[in-house]
Image 1: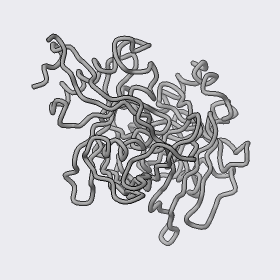
Image 2 (image 1 turned 120 degrees about the horizontal axis):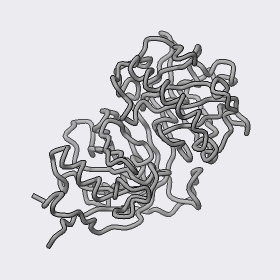
Image 3 (image 1 turned 180 degrees about the horizontal axis):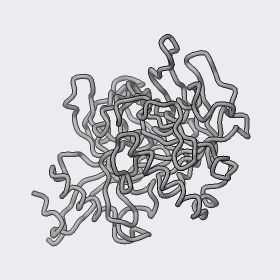
Image 4 (image 1 turned 135 degrees about the vertical axis):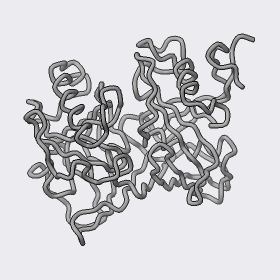
Length: 362
């Protein structure tokens, strides 16, 4: 046999999709693991024609699950972002959309037994140390994907997956404001550098000559903007203490503008080399926190909620995402927790194959 078979689930989690593996079914060594994921997804070609990737950053994401080694958590979730074109794997960030599928995947894999009509699973995001409580519908102890929940960017209705993110501040850099400032100016652009669930560099769309209402396709075609944004992100990442981020997907980049459809704030999110077609779950928490924090680049763009918990409605390229943020103003401004509702669905299961020359399974 010239190929190695690896058991997997193929799932949509939120507005992303990809393979979900048991961590024990993959190589321990990260270099070998990266080669396996590149081969499985078909990274290195724009259509991922020789793998199961979908030719977009939101469809080349990987979740690896195991029984948690943490006393608090039930499941450990290790994430990998596999590039579409460049044969690169980034193990630094986590992904909240793919996390939406972790609880149902853990049940499907037999890593967690459903309990009653609603099952609560405590998840540790291994990459960042974030702690998340996921609640899924399990009527009479059976997992279901059928329900009435809708999320922008996904057609139809599904069972809700309730996510409560705990300890989201400073998960990557160790600080709410990694530069120590509410605003920084980098290459003439005013920014807020913030780390809540995902380290981000956030700017006003107008400061790039944009409205903030452009479609993802319009933004992707704007190479002048991407060149300028990329240079700003790299310098800001260094100021955030993240070193050379030129080949890392973090920090992510976001733009803010006044809401247009009755929401709290209009946003665009970058992955960072393409525009996100919707909105990342982790990025949504960071941008919602930016919206709520006095003194950030969001000042003057919204009527800021003052009571906690606050519902922040972010208008993105495909619709809206609601974030419920618990915050405190007793000693300055601090974020305590953030919650969202997403959906997930199992699409396929079986084995994915990689050449034995990449990994022989031992």
